[in-house]
Image (cartoon, rainbow, N blue to C red; front, side, top):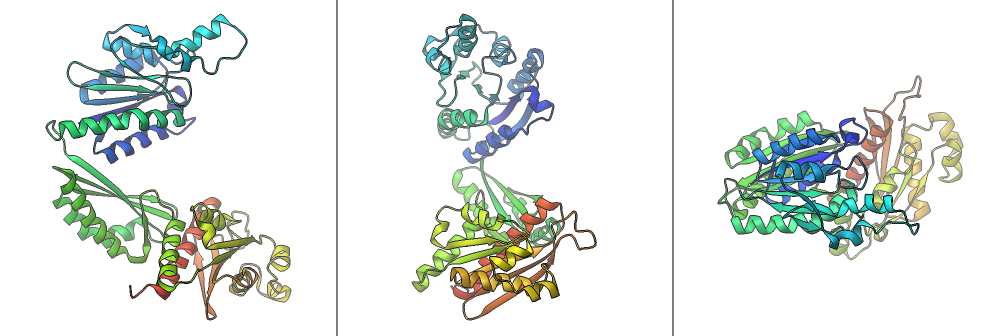
Length: 433
């Protein structure tokens, strides 16, 4: 089944906000096994909305419209869709309670009438009550077997209605119809890498990409600072075939990339760090702990670690020592070392890591110091020193030059050192397993 996604809102066409809804819906459709062939973004204009709805109906079996279902004058999706389908808008009084859920105690007939606009749906459609917000949606099956959904555009309302009502419906439809209607089952995964460029990845896996095409697996590479994603899309006659081919290419690429590969799909790098530590603890019966000492990243490393649920099992804490004063007072960095070598130096970075390890009594500690720019003047913007200290006087330092703006450099640094910590722990305890 081919799908179209239509996002409605002048704020989208003016570029005032990102169209995250279309991305989310398309991604979830792929998870179900469906492919989005077309995406439309249209402003709040009835004639233009009608035009793209007609296009969606012409080229797709499933049309998902989001936005323009609220109570204000620019919420005109209901009327536009009804016009295209040549069906009357009728009020479903069962929706009134949710339509009026945010009505204030002050009685105002005009406000009530505006809010009740949300209770109107095209004749013959199935109403979808919102669990979040007040705007109802609807589903309508057409005589030619096509199905059209309308859901709110507010992201949390859209996601709630999409997951609760649309996903289960489409999953049943895919299961019932199988592949009788001109499509293949889709399966998707995303491989996550860091500290490697898009070009390097492509060079390393070019032979695998050729092999992937032969078994109907598409490979795409998406570059972001500090995080390169490899998108795999497998098509098969059934779920088993698609999954088998997907896993085959996944395994080959992940092995080829080695330590540059750290996770899949929606995981973050600290999730992978946590999994390695769990494996070590299970193998050794110990309880590994880590700490951080940050300068250039300003707490970002600690923040990323604590984004992982259960990080309190291994993360003891961190110190943000952004100034020379805090390096001396909080981390006990030697004043003479600071003056002689400067805050951005290998010597200071080592003292930061070693002293943080002692302060927290952790098994491992990481430290980072550098120039994020752009006001570094004669200093080298992007120059960063990193250090990892561990058991038995283990110590390793890194001197790197990271490119990008201030935020990009900070993220690259955090990704790099957390990945190196993951690799360090893995190689010490699990390399043979």
